[in-house]
Image (cartoon, rainbow, N blue to C red):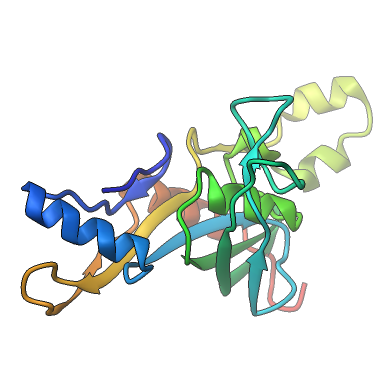
Length: 204
């Protein structure tokens, strides 16, 4: 019934017959299906809660990208984000956020978060870092030779830190409210754990 980006994990809805497909399509069209994602973004998101309400369209210069710049084919897109946890350590500043989307545009969360200066970790298409470098060790090594010798620790994820965590919608046949959840996959849990191990002392 809908898609996830190649490097996004989590829940999707699949219809088993035409009747269910039509009923689910109506639920999607009327925005009765609530979709919530977990994302780790770069930088410290200042506000605990916020809404991004900017149209999303295909970037005419780079066709693999979407953009929030005003374009003729841009479509309405609304994302609500809420801070779950903030991290500040030798790898930089990051924010774990919960994002609920009202619409389902291509790359919506990725382009929306990047548009406010907080790209998803691992999302190199929209300015996220493919790997995180120990900034303390990098800054301590003043010369090129020292930097090569120091070899600061790096964390590499190899995908976007974006996960479709929850779906909520009425069952297309019975009307019973379905609340579905998918935990973070092991690779994201491990990456987050390694990142938290480098957490700076409280108040830093």
